[in-house]
Length: 142
Image 1 (spheres, rainbow, N blue to C red):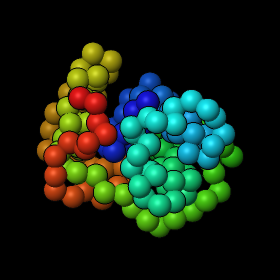
Image 2: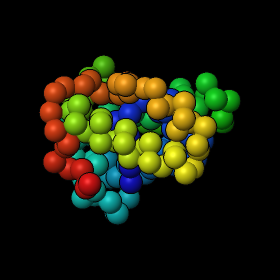
Image 3: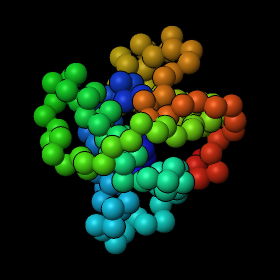
Image 4: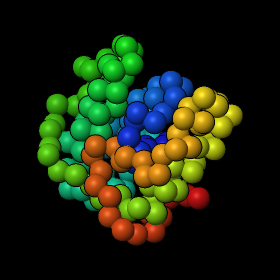
């Protein structure tokens, strides 16, 4: 499961569809609707935010918004109804780690995007996150 801290605009088509599916799975886990993945490290930050159902719903809303920009037909009815204006912190080190990880994927999977993003100095975070100074997150498995 990879719940990117990066803005979904950077993902290729395959990556965006995978993110949608994985975030829906995360929503099911955080809502107690499935037995698997309960200890997945990527979910720690949503639980730590105090309102995990609302936070994952907001995460999904941003992924859905990106899908609409691209003309995809993701089902918004699958997004939980909880809402929040809260944001989660993501460290600059985590964002940098994820950016390198994504760029490595894009180099083989979507070379045209890789080339385009070489000029990006500071990638935007997913709208749920605000960037703070720091190293790679403890939950990350580099």
